[in-house]
Length: 274
Image (cartoon, rainbow, N blue to C red; front, side, top):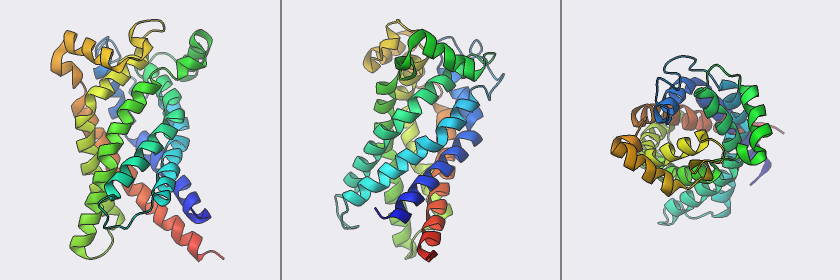
């Protein structure tokens, strides 16, 4: 990947990540509280819906930047003809690699953010300090496996679908899609991926909110899903599905539209610069 392409992916990814996380933070808080084992009202209800926003703000830029740099690099490395039947596979592999790298940054900020969302009266930095003191570094990575197991299936659906919708729209209108069209494709792809991966998101939330030393905190996704199924049934597995679909559809519109627009602008500046 040449330097303009690398820097464009880095900056565009970071800008897109910060934009979507800050705009949609209240919906994310509501979704987390709906999935909390203590219940929506005890977790805070509609009070303090910006609790945990400092953690999200700090983690957003490097998290999204790491994802898109990896995503674009792997796509470049696995370059295939645009008409090849292997193209969706390339996008799946690139998205999966991007998620594994991005989760190294995302999970610590997600752990702090989600605990703050269900403890709105406690400051974000105090929660961060308590995790380090009581659980060590491993406490910040509680739920890493479950997050990766949620994000990879999500990206396996979202990114090939996004790329395919863009390609189809480009073919229909006989020119490359505009940024707003890319955003619309992102909204459809994100909403569909959000719906089918909600049980994995529920498991991830339960594991991250679990007390250290509990059976749930061990990070066994199947065991957690089984426990939710036994206690709450299908409704429990799909807790928070509607705010999740709403947030990620809108998020896909903002995130992927902003990424495409910023990426294109930065490439133009890079090409035009001496």
